[in-house]
Length: 393
Ligand SMILES: NC(=O)C1=CN([C@@H]2O[C@H](COP(=O)(O)OP(=O)(O)OC[C@H]3O[C@@H](n4cnc5c(N)ncnc54)[C@H](O)[C@@H]3O)[C@@H](O)[C@H]2O)C=CC1
Ligand SMILES: O=C(O)CCC(=O)C(=O)O
Image (cartoon, rainbow, N blue to C red; front, side, top):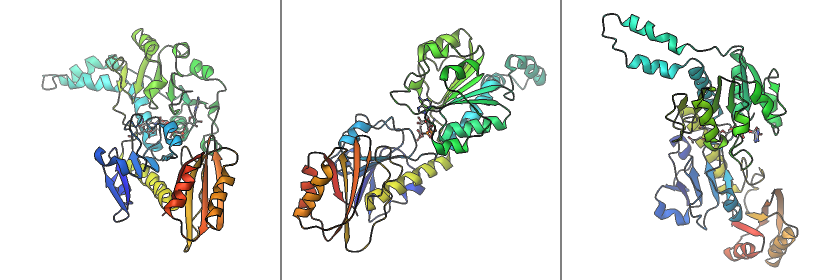
């Protein structure tokens, strides 16, 4: 039985894929020591102790900044996410946010809420206040999309359909996403040129060392007066102090974000949501199902698909009489020779073997004739550059 620890609420339709008797799902931290896998959404795992039994982490979503990737690599633990599974949900919220900000919908609705509509002339009250909430139309305005991945491409295409003139910045756009991007989207070679010209800017990059604080004082100051900034990516991508100053000086029309902060949330120009981007039934189900399928394929057959730290190795198992060993190792010369020598000493005949690397890490999948015992696995684990070794199944 494989034990799966769940750190956040995961859609039941996904968890249903992990049925007993093969799997047992638990939440309590006391039992974490022997979990083979952890399922997580946004819970912060940075300080979580990694049990020696852990083989994989499944992020039912996209961003993995809550997972200590370096620590996972050192422990030979595979990390999976669900690319694209919640992109439509985020796109819809971003479009709603853009419209809310451009038409001042939140303060306008608040204004109506506090009116006494039982008075003699309610329509007079309504009409008297509305001029304060006059907004602008999106059609014809310039939208800048920073990060043209699963979400950025959908936002760019939807904004184009609304009549916006769309600019995109992504120096490392994938071929897959480039294919899906409307060809009318203008490409910006420099982030600065996008910021200078766009009335609305939306950011859709992952939180990495290279993107933390990417919208700093110098860059924020390039935004035209009256611009709207949307951040449904991660709070840390925008530097708060200069943004606050621009909002207080009314140089920006609005900041709409999914990541509330104490320094900004109280400002009238700020609209904050409680990290709602992926909170739709559809996205929650899709994310859970997608990541759990990949987690299962890894635990049961050693197959790697959509991992954020291991290379893709979509090799189906060979069938009866064949044992499969999965090894995560440092990507260093000589390691394969050490592995095959160790197997040779046990007289085990290799039927098939694949080794793929991704940066500092490599993944080796070996199909063998016959039985594999715990002593062999122990010997493999003791090799200097082997981070984890296990029998699949
Ligand atoms: N608010 C919410 O609930 C959600 C937030 N997110 C956030 O949105 C981020 C993006 O999600 P997806 O579009 O699904 O990811 P993705 O991986 O499909 O796209 C990210 C894009 O950013 C680009 N990029 C990376 N560094 C860049 C840089 N320095 N400048 C410009 N572009 C850069 C990449 O090339 C890639 O095309 C996630 O990493 C997560 O932080 C994702 C889902 C839900
Ligand atoms: O699971 C969630 O609600 C968070 C979604 C998110 O931020 C992501 O997928 O990166």
